[in-house]
Image 1 (spheres, rainbow, N blue to C red):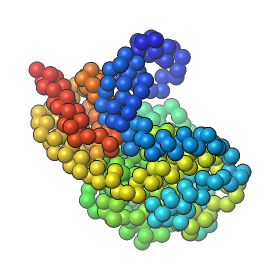
Image 2 (tube, rainbow, N blue to C red):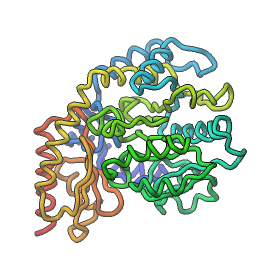
Image 3 (cartoon, rainbow, N blue to C red):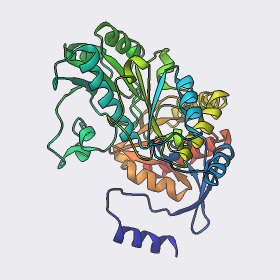
Image 4 (cartoon, helix red, strand yellow):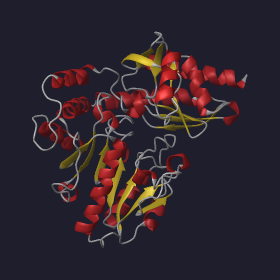
Length: 401
């Protein structure tokens, strides 16, 4: 079937919880994908950072293929021979003691919320049922009912209540707002070091350092959602590393699965993670042998520092080229190989610009009206990045004409 037929069937028989661009991808390699008609596109979204290491990364695929022939699932009712290596490696990568593996990013965020609350009751001494967590405006941590309950995005939130209490929403980028929101029952501050879905919003310099100090001073856990920003995307292993800040909990996902299987995790020291006992949290597929084999391959790639260096160097090149775009671009934000570009609304919506780039062979995704995001795989070449920016420049010229 051709793209038109496949799209028609998809729209007829699947829930309309997404509004995909009209392209049907059938194969991929590195930073490039190919549709069912054979047209190639430069992937500048990378599965929202799930494909940091590129489509079909040989090290990741080899690990997955070898594990598929041996063992894929035991459940956590038993040990398996890939688990110890994975949790040890991820602990070392994060500089922490313990890992609680899950599957999706939203599951990992839910896990972090549970751990923080239990720590608050058992360690900090918060009265039962009184724990609160400080969260940020314009956050995006997933789609579960608990998480959308503290979203400020009407599309994510409206129509899904009633919501769980226990969250205090403050302005992102304001350390003082966090300080004012904390009281004796606050157990955690949960934030994205860079807000991805909001348009790749980078906080002011010193913000993360101030958050760390505030949390330490008030005996509150600093929980960093590095699901999109972590594992090389910004030019460091974690976005928190840009300020040399170490949170109490890392929440990881997306790239941890190498674009092959869903893998997520919460990583913390034993004085925090140790509050979780047998039967208090779990997942049938969390930490399964296939996930551990893939995750361990990802950890191996990050140990070399090669991908972090590529994101730094190519990111500097990308942002320099984006700064030259001129008329039609209201703002450019980002860090490493990650950029949010605000398009002049008079030239079109983010969706319209994304569709125009699609016709030119570049895949991006819009967010919040007139913003588009660039997050190519870290294996992308300099020439490919230059070509992608040239296509955006051409689209903007056409829109201004």
